[in-house]
Length: 102
Image 1 (spheres, rainbow, N blue to C red):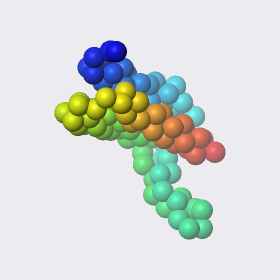
Image 2: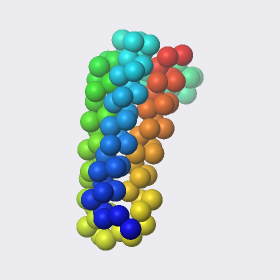
Image 3: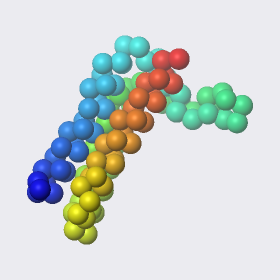
Image 4: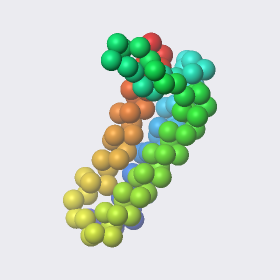
């Protein structure tokens, strides 16, 4: 079994993939990306494109490091727990790109 530090590094690299995805799709994203929708289905909150492209990956990495440190501190033996944050980050990035380009 790999040491916990290896899983933390791998999960952090997976979180950084969100930056690669957002940089690759940056040209297709509008200047203001919808981030919240009302009950009628209309966008009610927008973020600037660069805040999303660079801010989301930074937030994903920070959250991953905090969660991983907490898991390691508790001696978590279930390795999949270290990869939940990157999985959610990549799915959220795909949703942002999908909704931002429609």
